[in-house]
Image (cartoon, rainbow, N blue to C red):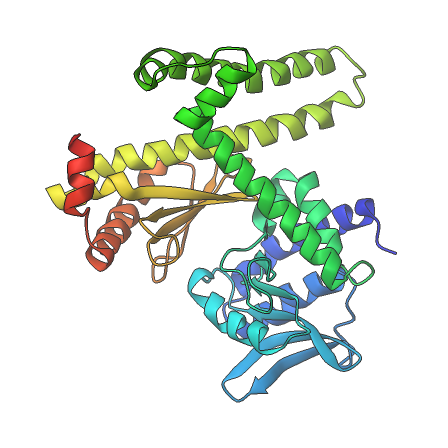
Length: 371
């Protein structure tokens, strides 16, 4: 039976080994052999047993996947592998087609050997979700360790614990957490009228005009919201700093990592919007910055223009040692740097391409922006 501590230690060991050899894996076969199979072994699957892990499993000649985890001869988990460093976003459709073709497959894993994306069918039965409920970046784990939230979700995918209903529940929890975080972050950045009225009602303030909320109460609620999130954590850190010296370093590291990650992601997103304003060559591109948004995932954010799937600009993963990862669509791929200015060319190129592909702001949006 795989325990959380065993999985944490094993995942850290696999991450460090994978990072040390990833540059030697320059094709799909070497990535599968040296990076993907050890990860499956970590999850408890016997990749030396063709009755359990079957390579190149096909539904039809044009619908197959790199590996299938079998139970009683039927595939229950699909794994699609690409070469180390490859961008995964545009490969989701392939594993999605396989997933959707076999009713017993309830978990799909898309990977390039160091980045693993986990999908289920939480939205529509037997149809793979467009977004992963869990993303594991072995490079980040090798540098910063394993977050409890990641471990909690991953253990449901191990051989000893895997069950379609359990994995669906774990995925649902992760997706709800992610969406709640996004909703709370949006409200913290700029409280909506509905949220303001809800908060004011809780303290006995009712029948407030819309203009008064926008002018007076919204800024107060924004400040109170931020303080209510930050102050308790600061107090907890202070208390732990004076507590047991043996336990506080780990607790401080885990808490500060989570706080810094969320805050740093938001700072990065806001920086990207400001930087695009500087890099824009024309009015159409400049106006289009209004539609640059992000979606928050476990361990990363996806920055996109207008539509996440078609308008993706890059994925951002914060590095614990100051070297952050920016994953742009092919042919640019990954940029790992401690200087955000190094992504200028890629950022400008991809954003301009997305605006050309999807179009700039509509006339209605322009008028709304002016208003």
